[in-house]
Image (cartoon, rainbow, N blue to C red; front, top):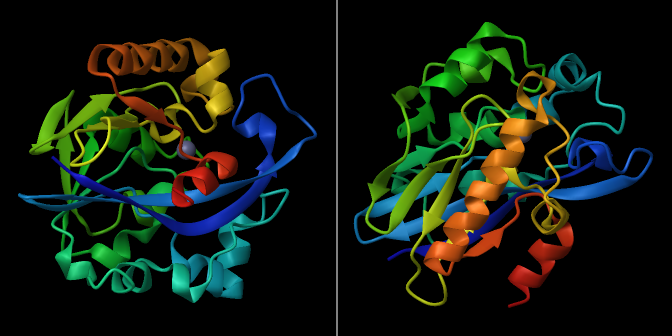
Length: 250
Ligand SMILES: [Zn+2]
């Protein structure tokens, strides 16, 4: 059984076609960049850690990393750094026992420096692909950083009530998370297997796909929907501002 808290680490404006394959070009959307705090009797884990504050705050680093972003870098305030967000819950980064990364894009793995004491679980295929350097949304110092990497293969349960579900396609080794909650139906945190509710409802692949091939991502999306059917779980998209606002308004 787990307690689940979304942490809004930044907001990012970008072309909707980055979230929906073959759709939405010319439409700009604003997306939440989330980390998810999962608390169980066995400890606390973070599913994703948001962006690297240093690369957004420092003008030189920002220019170096985000120059190619048409709509600019994500917007992140000091209050949206993990230590501050955890602090608002009465916690410190040291209270985080484990990080599970959905994948290694900058808006998911950038905050690792804030929780550098913790083990970082990532799929082996994900890390290997990221280290090859062919994905410009992976920042080299993050995927190659001196963190406590633990490379995993396939699905497993890192803590009681928490199941890692491989959902590759957006990236080589993307994973989603199935959680049994203390209150309410189980939840599948889709990660970037489904940025928006639209991805789930219309079965549209994410706009960025591993090797530009949406078929694996679609297979994973349908797999997550099957998991939801079999377990009675709700499917929660990852970059959907309207969904996020409904979620936090209860
Ligand atoms: Zn991504």
